[in-house]
Amino acid sequence: MNDTESTYLSFTEVCLQTGVDEDTVFEIVEHGIIEPIGVEPDEWLFSPTMLTVTKKAVRLHRDLEVDWAGIALAIELLDEVEQLREQNLYLQRRLSRFVDM
Amino acid sequence: MEFKDYYKILGVDSDADNKAIKTAYRKLARKYHPDVSEHQDAEAQFKEVAEAYEVLKNSEKRAEYDEIRHASQQQGFRPPPGSTGGHGDNQYQGDFADFFSSIFGDEGGARSSGSTGRRPFGQRGQDIETELPIFLEDTLSDASKEISYHLPRIDSDGRVTEVKKTLKVKIPAGVADGERIRLKGQGGLGIGESPSGDLYIRVRLVPHPLFDVEGHNLIITLPIAPWEAALGTKVTLPTLSGKIQLTIPANSQSGQRMRIKGKGLPSKQVRGDLYAVLKVVMPPSSNEKIKDQWQKLAELAPFDPRAEWSEVA
Image 1 (cartoon, rainbow over the protein chains, first blue to last red):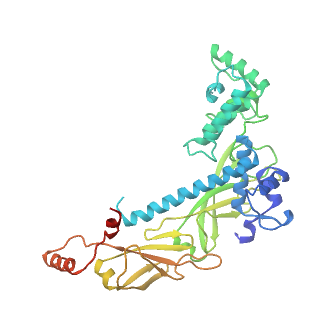
Image 2 (tube, chains in turn yellow, brown):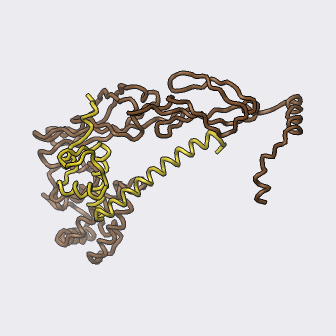
Image 3 (cartoon, each protein chain N blue to C red):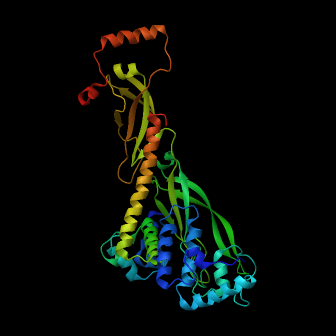
């Protein structure tokens, strides 16, 4: 029931699921917030994670009244924070195997 | 239903101008937006703030609200008759948006972040995201996992209820932490002719008591005795797929990494490696005989572990 193909989404599906128009998704792709697979929009494929990021970008744009360049920056930084948090947890776990904490 | 003071929520005076209201909203929205905030009830807080702003930024709605606010200060708050937004009963009691719709109906609706907003007729079902904890061992080959999740359903009376759904899901080998798997059409039911939403499963690798994950590589901390580090030894090392023999060379150092090829996690292209990190541990106690031996060693070995310090000092 879960074949790998079906986990990717088309351009139209992304518009439908995020509830925004094509121009908005273009805007998000053009700002490099997500990078769909494929060159032409009609062959673009979006991973589920890209969909999640798109939804987040749309929410932040609407709720915080920030332009797309700002959203791109915010999402990059949020991503970095999450990575650092995870890395921090990981390093703490590693460290605890070597020293008493 | 309790009266909500939108001015208090935004932290502005009741005669604040539009600019002040906007500034206050933006500041609070940045603070409580569920996508950026670490606050515990960020979502609920943000909804309040967004709802307050929805009303106060619009001069018509604000005037209407001011009137109700004024009246409620004198005689307590009673929702205006006949203006409830179409969902009777008390099923939404406690929901903040209820106060909003008691005044303004469902039109325009408060902006809600996330997917909890009520949807108009004839719309595609909700997408659902759920987390699935996976053991490292399960990522070695395709695994079948049973997941249960709750789906919102609107019954014939228009009430929102939850139904539990259980699915068997194939988790492909080599799945990574944080990866999302999409199951088309397994989310919330569509309204009318509209299709169902999708189910997104977010994979979470469960921390393993022995192995830490670094990309596709695994790391195991391998404790050895000081003499094992000095003389070298053979140890039996657990891996995710059975035990192996590992040779520790003489003169090994604490913290040193040894690579065991192909014993990490699988990925789409290659299989990661396992790294054994040596940790030299002292025996907890010793007797006179052993102490004697250490003493001899101390006299014999020309070794200053703090040589680096003397260069600095």
